[in-house]
Image (tube, rainbow, N blue to C red):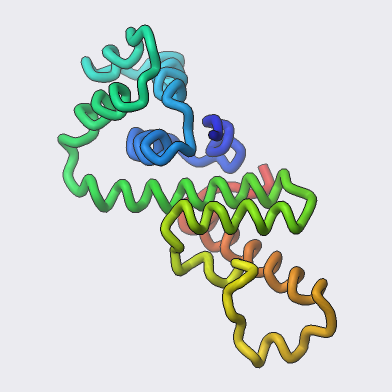
Length: 173
């Protein structure tokens, strides 16, 4: 599981949809909900009744926290669409974190492959999944396995730059 630093590292603003998706799919520990609320308090933001309920929980039961978050955000329109956006943002944040922190290319690619499976094989990740087929016009120029790995790393970087631009985030902060 990751912490909120996952999003802080790329300066991605947090919201309940992001936390809900992350907690529901075991990317984030349920305790991040209270951490998020303390940040809101430190920013002098008012808390809703549902948010106050989360603050006063004695245990951080995943299902209880998800129910409280759902009560807080379900009133907003386009819930499913906003959860899809949260999934995309989480995917971006995790890949950015892995690219920054994992120096062993084999381990990096393996962790990204696990994420690919965990997220139900999103199409926008196919270009940097090691076992996915690549266009023959590209592979004919590869002279060794390092060329193939460098191509995958380049594709990861392209993906990250596109997402950073889309979500107005910073990869080098």
